[in-house]
Image (tube, rainbow, N blue to C red; front, side, top):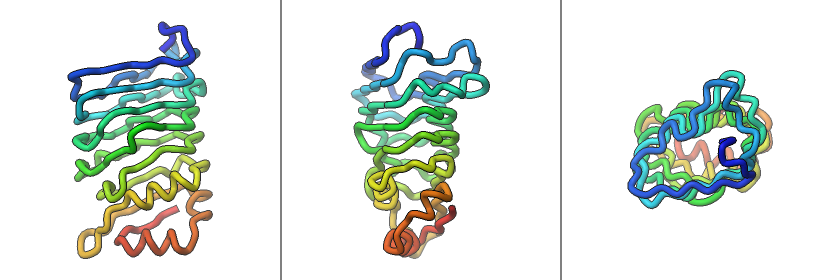
Length: 190
């Protein structure tokens, strides 16, 4: 990140099929101190975003990166494990809504783990078919919550899945939102 020396950085990719470990930080010496807004554009469908912006250890105190503009088609992505894990300062993800329709396993594990400042992102309607956890994010906007609820596929007649929210977010759900979640055969935990 720091080699860019800018607050706003745009990355354009052609012909990539994976963004796995794009900016995977495991050592404090590589902590982001400059980039506040990262823009990622990709002209192809991505199959993996495993640990794309993963931050761990002493570098997990990166509070500089606040905004991600994500113009990437995720409709073929089968792996979101730890995609944004440790991005404690990330507040907004804008661009193309996340399409989780290719996920059929636990590949959403820890996608937003430790994303304590996260407020906004969008999910493609009816694309979530497996359990989804966003328990570390107490500041989700009303639009984001509704996008997640709209993103839940109707699993009636199938195996129930679990939506896990932060206690603050879950406590703010309306009765209609709770009823919508359970009517789609999802178990709500908060």
